[in-house]
Image (cartoon, rainbow, N blue to C red):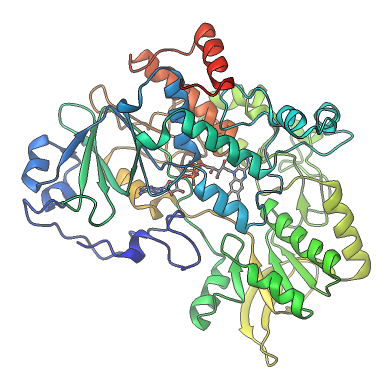
Amino acid sequence: MSESPTELGSIDPSIPATIMRERPAAAPAEGGAPPGSGDLTDELLTSDQWTDAMLQAAGIPVADVPLVSIGGGIGSFVTVDYLRIAGVPTSRIAVLSNLDFPWQTYEYLTRVSQIPRPERIRSDSASRPDNIWGFPSYALTEAFADGKWGELWHVFVEPMWADYYTPKAGRVFAGLERESKRIGWDQMLVKGQVRMVRKRYGGGYFVILTPKAGVTPTKRVAYRAEYVHLAVGYPGLRYLKELQDFRTEHKDYYHVVSAYEEHEHIYEAARTKPITVMLRGGGIVASRVLQRLMDDRENHGLQTHIVHVFRTFIDKAHSPNEQSLRAWNKRKGGHGFAYQGFNYPKSVWGGQLKSEMRRLEGEARATRYKEMGGTNTPWRRRWQAQMNQGRREGWYQIMQGTVDDMRIGGDGKIVSVVKSKSQPGPIEISADYIIDCTGLEADIAEHRVLKDLLDHSGVGRNPTGRLDVERTFELRGTASGPGVIYASGATTLGGYFPGVDTFLGLQVAAQEIADDLARRGFCKKIGTFRSISQWFKWARNKQP
Ligand SMILES: Cc1cc2nc3c(=O)[nH]c(=O)nc-3n(C[C@H](O)[C@H](O)[C@H](O)COP(=O)(O)OP(=O)(O)OC[C@H]3O[C@@H](n4cnc5c(N)ncnc54)[C@H](O)[C@@H]3O)c2cc1C
């Protein structure tokens, strides 16, 4: 019953293990270890609920911590931040994670998808994962810290006379670093790989951690907790099938890449000779990669040719339900892209859509998700000017299509056979490199911990196929005595709160969780006085 490095880490060496791509379906059936070995026995592997004696018989040491947060990324961070502000000491929380610091995966993903520290991210001025009050906003901080008073005017006139203000990635990371020191993150962090969460007879849960080899005498350690919070981020990367087939068949992970993999070599190649790059996808990552190619072209006088293929090609303002009463409320679109400032309309974070979604169940909720979601990107003046120039000068080509086949052409380039609605017959496009910007959309069951929860905890899937959570972010069906498992982030998308996979959404979830835990007596409620006094502590960088 081994967990090989490949199983635990990433399939492609350029992707760090922070993007978990565990594939239990493909993994060999796990056999139990002998009793007393400090590892998972047959009895533990097959039982939905464990007794303390079962762990003792397996020889797995048990540590008691009232609340365990699994993941250790931004979702864990904002939840623990709330709890620390609600008066919970570090000794009552353990964060189990394979990350060294909470923004590690986020920084990796943004950097490779062309948002390095000096560039601006997508979310707005008040979405501050390092500050539960959102005040002072990033724009205000930037204005004061860098003397950029224009940023205040910017947020005042956006989005009519300026693009939405968004903070620089570097500022977000600096704030997270400060706040993680303030709340004592490192005192709560336990490094390792979480293997599973199982219910405990008598209430609460056991969380099984595989620490780094050599750190503990046994292979596994169990955390006995009354409350568990799960924020494991994206279950994994999903490639377009034809791209994955091509990569596997030709063992070519160099010319066909995902935007979420290191692919700096493509920009470097463009500097040495004229190349053709094919882009797939119409979201913000495609916009970012496109911007990088266009910036480099402009700044270094390059001859890069870009062919952009959209599966769903948007050529005008649109609504998914043209006949509905909501048809007046159309989303902007053009030249392939659907445009929207943020990934959902702003009211999902605190307006009428937030309250409407809280009341919708089943198919009605899934339909509403489809109506307001979908792939989209912000409309930014600079991007528009660059794309217009590219179209005019003929080096940026856009088209609707799906790729039927891919092969290596006579000149060594990659030929994609595209079927397009706009043209009869297949179109052959030859490119030096293909960048897949279509996303991080693997099924939740591809993540080993989530698969185990689906099989053993009683949780089901929500109307869009992710983990089913209550309005309080409790995993429905998983209560164990007084114990509760909460979950937030991408794995719960499709629940009563749509914006959950965003900084602000993770904070909204954290607030619901903290309120629920306060009702259960685990922490204090963050009322007006606590909130004000804690804000002053935050401002003076004092421990909560
Ligand atoms: C490119 C990109 C840009 C984005 N930009 C924005 C933006 O501008 N604004 C915004 O609001 N949102 C943005 N988001 C969305 C979201 O806010 C971030 O993805 C955020 O990092 C999600 O936090 P998380 O905790 O859910 O996931 P993560 O930050 O990824 O943390 C979860 C971590 O859990 C760890 N983990 C998983 N399984 C295990 C296990 N079994 N054992 C131990 N550890 C485990 C992994 O290291 C994983 O990374 C962006 C997302 C992406 C991909």
